[in-house]
Length: 252
Image (tube, rainbow, N blue to C red; front, top):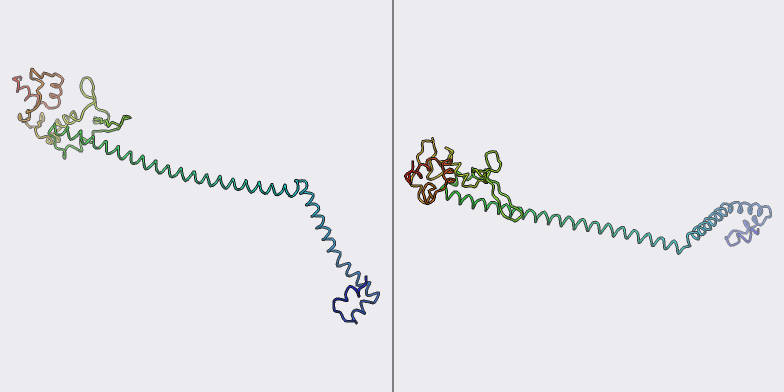
């Protein structure tokens, strides 16, 4: 190695170049330089080997084009996963919205059914109270506590009169469902509730029956309107009225 040639472009002085030009010095310096290059050469060879291995691996996979295809396929798969998650989120949102709408609709339906039942009960009770000349303020709480209203499959309001045990009340020998009028007749036998009727008496209570209340009442003891079933009902519900009706047709 010609050290002078190697270092002449470094701007070294002639004296320094003269030292390098010495054969012994030049040989020693050449060894130092070669020794310093050795690790670099080793690293270079190592990197070249890795590159070769990498190319061999790529070739086994089908080359760089195959790698690009795999990368593209992975990207597409990732996108499909993202789209699926987005659709799932949208579906949940739609389901939640529909759930809220259905709940709101059901609440409105229940509210309307409740109003329908209340209106029917009020109408039936008012009619029964009017016919029985009952005091709504006094009797209404007692009446409603003995009534159960439901809407059947046909959308009709069905009112059931309950007995003291809260079960459907059946009356008469044929065990027919009781009506509100039957309930009011039973109230007339109750000393504390009988005062809620304009013209009513109770057996054993000390009250007397007002005969004027017979106006407009169909007399089941009269020959033309004879009704044994009705007679029994009146005797059980209002003995004083029964006596007055019998007396009206000359029967004792």
